[in-house]
Length: 352
Image 1 (cartoon, rainbow, N blue to C red):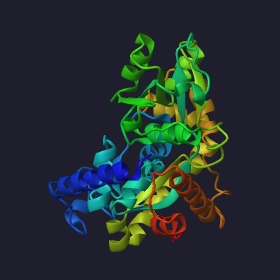
Image 2: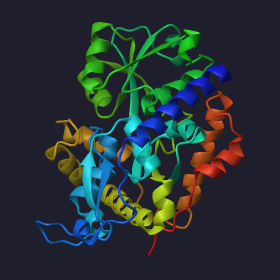
Image 3: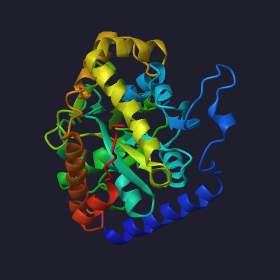
């Protein structure tokens, strides 16, 4: 990938995000006492009402759904409003502090390098993305993707970044200007699958559960599984990113959020079937096959309480460094890898 083109694109992105952030009203540093008390239930929330992106339909968003439905956010002092938010909206909200925390992959790393003020504060789970092709397709490996059209949910999102790493590590440029592959965004996974079936795209990079549902139905064959690919397996595919503004203003608020997420992770580990019941019954993800959904939930490696030990933060930091190094090698990051990893990861003292 040519660095000059990447820098120009990055500069444009930073300008766009900066300008957009000026148009988004920031909430105050602290919520008023009235804002912290629910007018209907009378429940007092230490940190008041906050927005958390949690309506993208991905099965791997389970900790958000469970923390919300099981009351873990409320226990930690938050009146959470789950919202829909694309990649750009998440970056803007994190940058100005209106969204305190989001889950996301290393797709944030280039944006952090170019000015988005956020930190990696925890790891969430392992693989949850599959690349599908039509059953009669002659595509079976990454080497077959040269000259092909790949569908993604959004340019710059996790499936796009995963595909880029997979391609670049195989010597195929993911830079659109190189013309070796073409990425086409689809705002809805079902539209992406329809585009695959019609031949509009050759490969669909899909969040679970769509890829697995269609694979089981025989509609597609899977050529890439994030949880099994040698480069990605046993590494976090999603981290938790906290707004640096919120971290600086009130680090205990971020710690409280992480406690809620960790309670949810541990509950999912112990109760995968019950987790699926909640997720499906509350329409957080569209999947009727609960047995398949439970198998997928187990495959994401949500940690147990025992895993949240004194070595947990080191594991998170190690995976941050792993992907920083990987993105640097293929030209997606310009900074010194060691210094950049030190910059973007921040350990949070989670226990009270």
